[in-house]
Image 1: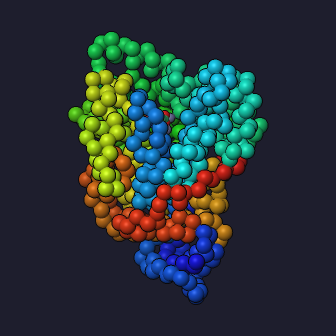
Image 2: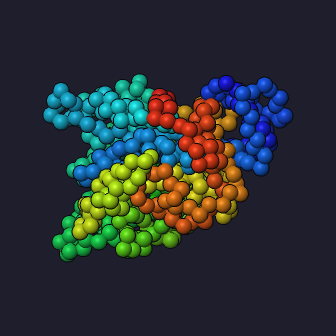
Length: 479
Ligand code: URP
Ligand code: ZN
Ligand code: ZN
């Protein structure tokens, strides 16, 4: 099967140029001007941009939390991603205890990956996994390198969620050493778990139960201090480290400080931290904006943008982890009614509101308008942050994140002039709200190819459950 895309403008992380692209089966086989090839399909991309399919390095699909589950699974979340121009998503495996009872509730990597593979059987775009390292002992330490053989090159550690997901700093440091010796990357969720525990207990004792208290009890200084602490451990262990969902201006400062001193530390931010503030949590529907870490201030938004403009940060992921605002009311998805308990679980207590928000589809369209068209980042930086850099950092380049002969034909044809009044009506995310409701966007995906197969054509969905492949990843680059 040959598809020839004619007359498009290719945007890569470093260049912008006119070219045709030939896709043969799953791969890009030729890039050049005026290609004359017998093909099964031709696509005229005059006045359109050709981007490598987006790579979302941070999503949580079908994630159990607070007695419910994130409302997009590996089919619905992937479908939404594709409509937003994203063709690869990286999800986090929850470390579950061994079914054999080995070590009394101790996490078992093989078993946990098997469980996640089963969930992801319905994948509609390509995907890979990070492992949540939420326990640490000698046996787990010994087994970490086995993850590389499974194609999982990344460990996520938490400096918050005491008693649940957090491991102590000594264990994080030891995990970093193991990662360094085995070509792995440590991803870090940076907040100060001890301060959070204290402030949450005090807030509840005083009867503060509204959503804004989620932010007051997870202070920004804790995120800044944890970022520097993690960067310090990276320096000392010489490991490669990636700070997820950076949300504070001060975190950008710490990242810059460490990087200027040669520490192999990289940073990701997410669209929500570029646009929203604690004021959103004060609204009557504030629970929609509850995620961890929380929204901060306008000054933080601005410093994060500066971090992108100046290349201090390396990627923009989503941390897509949607919940319904009112999970008691079913919504229609592909012709069926579905209700999944969501934010209403914490109506009377902010600590019971499931943490997380939607964004996997919104990322590219919102960032194009607010980033590229607004002049904050170039089109090439847009591609770097949302596709090429994640591919390089997470060991997928140049198979993914590239418009090169031999790369997978994951291609988004982008109409830079298409105007959309964005929101729920355009969204395929399986939740009952959209954070960007009513935003006027200019620039939108028109066609999306996954390994040569057209899966989105305007409003038409041509993909299906099972189209997505698991991507085994190898050692990545430090950018
Ligand atoms: O609120 C969020 N972000 N939920 C997902 C878990 C995490 O820490 O990334
Ligand atoms: Zn996190
Ligand atoms: Zn996350």
